[in-house]
Amino acid sequence: MSLKPLPTGLFTFRNIIEQGFLYVDKTRHLYPLIKHKLGVYFLARPRRFGKSLLISTLESIFQGERELFKGLWLEQADYGWETYPVLRLDFSTYSGANSLESYLRHTVDELALAHHVEVNPNLKYAESFQQLIVKLAKSKGAVVILIDEYDKPLLEVLDDSEAAKANFEPYLHQLADKLQQSYEQTVEAVRKRYIRVLFANLPYHLHIAEERYYQSVFYLLFTLVGISIHAEVATNIGRMDAIIENEETIFIFEFKFNDTAQAALQQIYDRKYYEPYLNQNKPIYLIGVQFEEKQKNVGNYLVEPLTLN
Image (cartoon, rainbow, N blue to C red; front, side):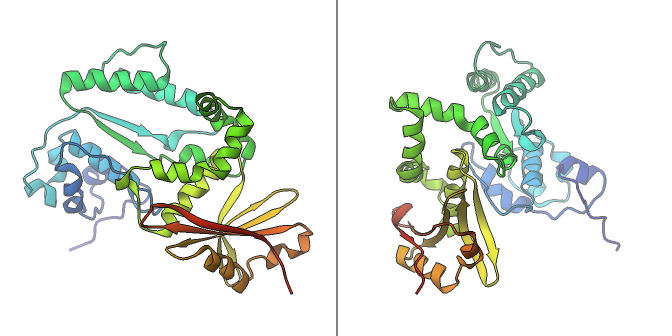
């Protein structure tokens, strides 16, 4: 029996099945996600792991395309194959050249058109999206929302702090208005205090008991406020978790999950993460951050200037 061709560059379930490409049947593992009528699921990592194909597969399932699943595990399962309206937001086509707000506005309008629903064009995109969901739910009973490449808008501006600031500054201004304080105070508060608040407000079921989860949120937060931060920076004997370098100062971060901030600092010294930056004649600060599984939040953190004997 000859092996089917590999679906190189294909991320659409329908195309893979109809064109006879190889598909590894993962529908048995999808079943727990779809058997309940309510649920919110966030799949963060790893990259290049088939999340877009997974989203496409879910789309075909919720659209009742049972014929595509012939011979797969799900076809024989006790799934009801009900048909639901699917709102799929795919950020893979987003370009940093366009504002995120205009892109979302266009996406919501296209979804409304595809589902033959009229939404108020004078509303903000978030309100229009809510209106679309409510109208579909009233007529269809339930709505499925799928979001693919959710991090694309951020990845577009990771190396461009000005672009990041332009994209996300309006949201920080909104936060400043709610807090009744200046924009500058809000940015400083986000940097110093709201990291803990951010983690505390993440729903329980979204927490992942791994260091990389906390590291990712930490990294995203700094980027959103316009700070250029680099993660997983390779050295000759390991990888430093994160580094922030500006014209005047260098900050080296080490994160520890269920370990101490002191242990994080000690690892920076033991592995000499600072060595590549010694010839830049800038002050170097070492920052050890503890993440606590029990509290699901940032624990202790230590900051100290680099001192070499």
